[in-house]
Figure 1 (cartoon, rainbow, N blue to C red):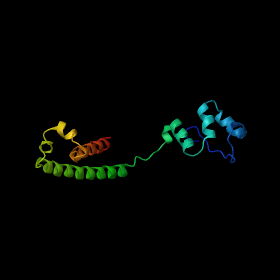
Figure 2: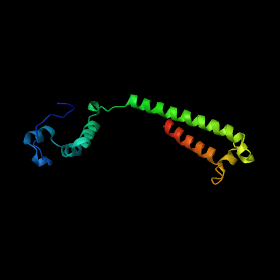
Figure 3: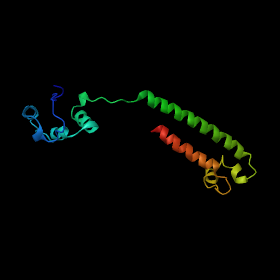
Figure 4: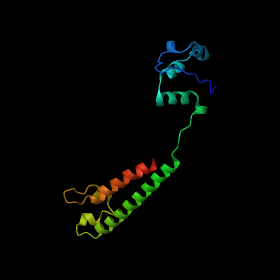
Length: 138
């Protein structure tokens, strides 16, 4: 018996309490709705219900190494985007377009740059970086 549950051989297709052997009905007494529902569930739903009712038997993977690998990929991606932003800032600082040349000192000019003049490339990159940082920080 594990956490109040006992292994009982139940024939395939048993889905109602009335279909269960009398010995099972006596062992469980079905005094809780959870017990009734758990007998009727299958697969992941049944496992989740049992783990929820008996937390000491629940075990799930944290995928630690996979999470760390994902963070490393995100760091590499952010480092590349940071380099692209730096190069674009240097390029725009030297621009003959007076507004573009002031992007590094004026957020208002940069964020309101016109797409049709392709002046908004730096702002688009900033927005992309912002979204990636948000994902990285979650």
